[in-house]
Image (cartoon, rainbow over all chains, first blue to last red; front, side):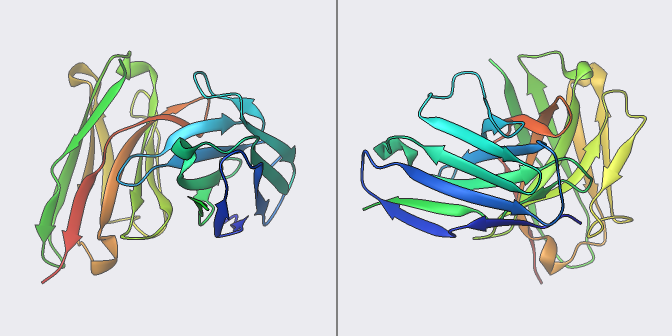
Length: 107
Length: 118
């Protein structure tokens, strides 16, 4: 199975800060990488697909980049409603696998 | 509005069985591939099973292969997960998810709880 390693596992930042999360795949996955947001007690929500494409309706402060094994997710200006856990997910090779998650908190 | 509503969660003893259901609305269910994804308490996401739009192809995580069966009834806009020989490590919140363009899960249910304990 492809292992997805996210860092950091938790992050504390201030409103307005730029936040970045990285995700590294154990082998190359081209651009078959998605990012999800999960708020407490809620289902995950797709934010970014195919590494860099913004899902419809998702604010433009969210972005993604990368290909192969190294990927980055960013929030350009952190908002209070962005408090959540973020997961990367590869779907290049079954089984689909997720990163362990990054818990984002407001400082 | 796209909606996925799961049901069937239970507290069950080890070795027992549970059948989860997921009813879809707001989109043409028969045209989408579907997945089950689970989340153990305080843990991350684990993909469990996949089914294509016409039920001709199914895939499973190794951890559930031979014990779980995914199926669907397109006439009833419904997805199912039959879970047999349950173990404590199957305790989790189970989500059904709509798959778009291969592997992109762009709609999720609210989740249903399965607890395996004696």
